[in-house]
Image (tube, rainbow, N blue to C red):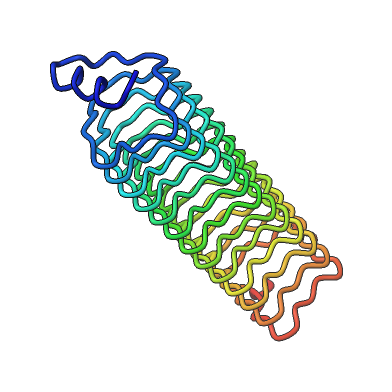
Length: 276
């Protein structure tokens, strides 16, 4: 099918375009709202500033597609191949990317409020400045992803994989990361206030300058982690393993350390909780 034919049929009221092939074409600025493009092949197509509200892209091939500035409000991208796609500044509020293959995707400055990213593969993805407030990322793989300055307020990242990912200055207030694999992740200067991170693995993670006020980090591995200058006021660290951790100049006022392992931890200059 050619672009002109597709647009003509859409204008006539047709919305069903299953398995259509439109590779390396320019669809910038088009309106395809509510269209069904299940299993379509749109590799390397330009959909810059396109209106794609409610479009069904389930299991579509969207590798290398340029979605910059596009509106994909409540779009269905379940199981789609989004490898190397660019969603910079796109609106994906309420969109469903569950189980998508999204390696090396760019979502810089994108709106992902209440989006579903469950079990998707975002290895090496760019989420710089993205808004993921109330998003669901259960069991998502974000290894080596860049989430610098991203907003993950109240996001659900249960059992997420964030191995060697960058979350510098990210906002994770009230987020859930319980059971997460966060080995060597970089949370420098991130806001983790009131986060729930029970049973996570933060071995060798960088939490220097991070705010963990009133966070629940119980039963968590922080072996060799960098918590220098971290704010741990009223943080729960019961039964956690902080062996070899760097707590230089950390603030641990009213911190719960019941049965925590602090063997070989460096607490030089730290403000420690009172022992009753």
